[in-house]
Image 1 (cartoon, helix red, strand yellow):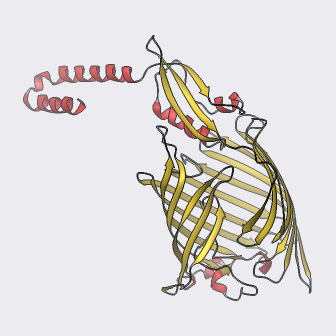
Image 2 (cartoon, one colour):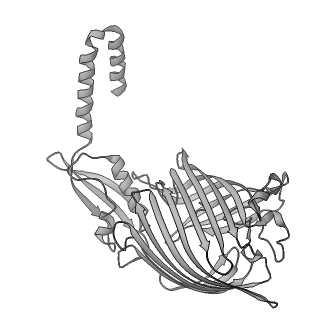
Image 3 (spheres, helix red, strand yellow):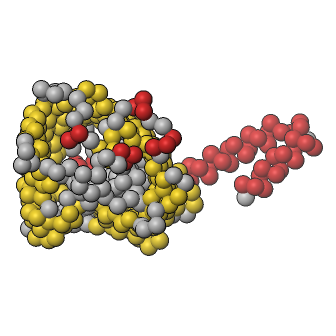
Length: 431
């Protein structure tokens, strides 16, 4: 129908220019009539499917106005905001027509598992190995989108952690979270045991839908111990974080951009300052396939003792490398204080639970390429220090934790790949 009108419109311009204005008038009038029939006025908004979550938690994420024509783009944005709360397995919307020609806009949701019973289970972390963990987590505490967590472990690390957050504690998207940690574990590649005590408060505020600022005062006591000496550091850290985020779905974006700027001043006897920025871009590539790109830069100023050194070759930077061993920091192309790396991932959902809402959850497979440079000083970065990695993996959805990330990769350096692959486990997406 639309193509026919377009053809007639062009034909009239070419053959009968006298009648073009009249014909255009009727075409526009016809389009307005069709649009008004397809976009009924929204008389009421209903929220369906809540068992525990309070209604106002959802109402404050709905921006579609009442007594106006349906705007499907606004309804989709509302759906994404509700889904990004992390409280639901599925969120969709639909219209219920009324006899007077208007309609009710309904948002339908299925609540996910928000609470785990006290659990005891083995856990693995790349740098710390295996531990026996105990966990109690409530993701939707009191139905108000608050998170409460108590976690402890022994084995690879001796740790106890308390966490509480409220994303709207003062209204208007002003959030507060608190974090208390006592932790002890062996350093991965230095001959030292690390003992940490940390107390963190975090205040954040959204400005509109895409800009967020956060300040996080942190008190940290960190000891690096061995049989020879103990290095003790006591720091006050007023961490600053600024973020631009236009992703559609946070846990597995199909499109959008995320920019993070962080400034971390470690104020104490041996002060140093960390500045980092991260840029992530997500591009729909085809049905259920996304091309995801990230670049991360870190600069460090001030005190640079070796106990604060970073390394490449794990699931969060350059994949495809075995973890460094004790006293391996002399292998300096993998170690430094300042770095630059990029990642490219092709992500495809292969087992999905999808409906008209276009929000999909399911098993996905990933192909990736990583590459970057790390050095003790920024001025020493050069092409001879390049490290890379290629491989593939999968993302397995998990209740509460979003997803388990499993990657297999082969490291690349000096124009050749490592013969043996490396296996990486982590929680949630790399970026």
